[in-house]
Amino acid sequence: MQKQKRVIAVHDLSCAGRCSATVALPILSCAGLETSLLPTALLSTHTAFPGVQFHDLTETILPTVRQWHDLGFEADAVYIGYLGSLEQTELLREALPYMAGEQTRIYIDPVMGDGGKLYSGIDPAFPEKMRAFCGLGSVILPNITEACLLCGVPYHEGPHEEKWVDELLERLRDLGQEQTILTGVMPDEEHIGAAMMDCRTGKVEKVVLPRVPASVCGTGDVFASALIGAQLSGVHTLEAVRIAENFVADCIRRSLAEERDLRRGVNFEAGLGDYIAALKNARQ
Ligand code: PXL
Image 1 (cartoon, rainbow, N blue to C red):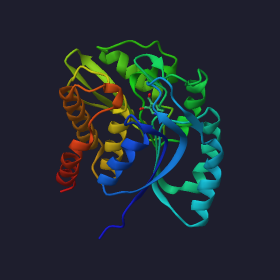
Image 2: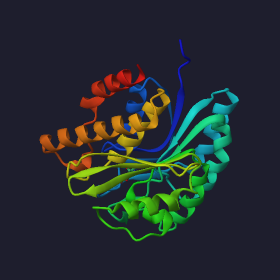
Image 3: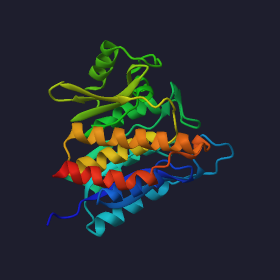
């Protein structure tokens, strides 16, 4: 029997609105992982809603990871998403050695924006800070907006020419250590997917699916969580990306059919059974 792996999700806790921690924890648990949360901020909802109550948790980060370290808690992976303050990029650099050993995979989703814009409340100095921070990541997972912000490239809505995507990936190549997985790549109006670069060899692979034409809050977190859960379950990257993309596409389709306020995120809960089955299939 293989030892259960442990992952630490470093995310905000947006109490309503299905993104970040409320999405990452259940998905990672469904992948069979022991899942811990290092909360970066406490919000009443995510920032696409008006009237958000925001509590920065910067001060709790070091004491928390020091306690975990004293208790001998080790992590096989650390998955870093939305940060509560600019200062947390520096602080997490200090905090990582308490959470991660030499074998620990560090996933960084440089959550900053979408649709060509920074999320509400994100400091304009974030992209510069995040650029250096990404260097700590074994795998980095930007969307097109975040990739453009990280590289100082003007954003443009899809479709994205292959040459443009490959050049963007090349610019991202030095940022992470092993893999860059760029999401929201649209080869044409009908398709969307991810482009992956092996940072060491420069090899690029793409996985595209029919596009569900809607942009919904939290889908980046669903994608990254499903991908990380699959990779840590031993599924190779290409298949892990395929599983995560299918999961997200099904979630968006289901949520559109429900005709609810899409700011409340996607109905990923109804897809968890299929996700578990897909992982089981891919592991065989
Ligand atoms: O899903 C990304 C995300 C995470 N956390 C918070 C957000 C957003 C996107 O808007 O506001 C607080």
